Length: 359
Image (tube, rainbow, N blue to C red; front, side):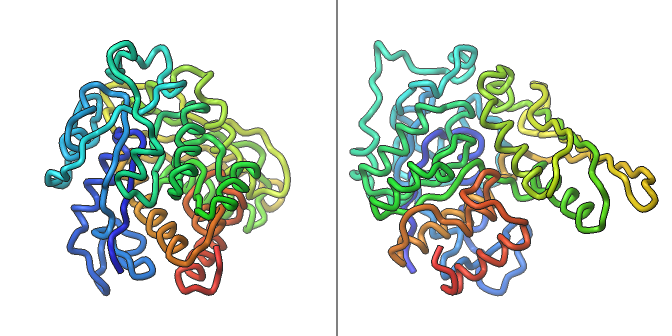
C-alpha cells in the first residue's frame, strides 16, 4: 500500500525504540505470530512501511547526524535490539521554547541559541514530504508542543501527540485539525504493558466483580531522562492529570488516589519499576488488597503502540478523515478525546480498520 512518511520531534529513547522496532520487525508478514506486535497487518500496512524522513532535536550531539546514529547518542540509554541502516536524513535543530527545563539543559546537551538557530519546522516538514509528525518531546513542554502542533497544521501534516500536553483532547485544537483536513491522535501514549493499562485492568476487574474500591496508588521509578525531567513537580501537572484520569474514569464513584512518577534512580537506565496498590471491600464488607510490581524496559513499551497509531493515522489520511481519531486515541492514549473501557476501545479500532467506523 506504499510507505508512510514519518517525522519525529524529540529523538530520545522512545523514538530510538520506535525506529529500531521498524527494522526489528521488517520481515513480519501476514499470518505470522509475532511476539511484541498487537497488529502485524494494520489495514494493509506493516511496521516496515514506516519511513523516517525528518527529525528534530535540541541535543547538539544529535543535530547534524544521521537519524540512525543519533538514536544511540547520549543521553539515550534504550538497549540496542536492532541494526538501523543509514537513512540519509540528518537531525535538524528544533525549537527549544519550554521543551528544556532549567535542570535539563546539560543532561540534554542543549544547543546554544547564540550559536545555532532552530529551523522552520513547517517548512522542514513540507520539504521532507512528511505525512505524520510524532511528538516525543519532554513532559511539561506546553509551548513547544503547541509550536510543533501548529507547524503540523501549517504543513498539512497529521499529528501524533505522545506526551501529556492536551492537544487532541482539547476541543479548540481538535477543531483546528478538522478545519485543516488532517487527522490527529493523542494525548499521552499508553505503553503496551505498562503501569496505566495494568492499573486500568485491575480497577475494571474489581468494579465489574462488585468490589468497592476504597483507595489506590501507582508509584513509578526509572533511570532515563524522562524520569530526570520529571523530578521537578512543575513539569508534572498534566502527567498526573492524564495518568489519574485514565484510571479513575473507569469508576462510577470517587476514591482517594495518587498516581505519578515518584523518583529518578539513575542506575536503572531505561528500566521502569512500578508499584500498584488497590484496597477495597468485597462481599460482607470484607477487605481485599492487591499489590502488584511491574518491571519493564520503558521506551520499547511505548514503541509497539506508536507503530499501531502511525498506521491508523495513515489509514485516516488515505480515507480523507480529519480531526481527532477517537478509536485509536481511546485505545492507545491515556487522555483521549473520548475515554472508554479498553475492551470497547479495542473493538472500535478493529471496526476502524475494517472501515466500519469512520474515526
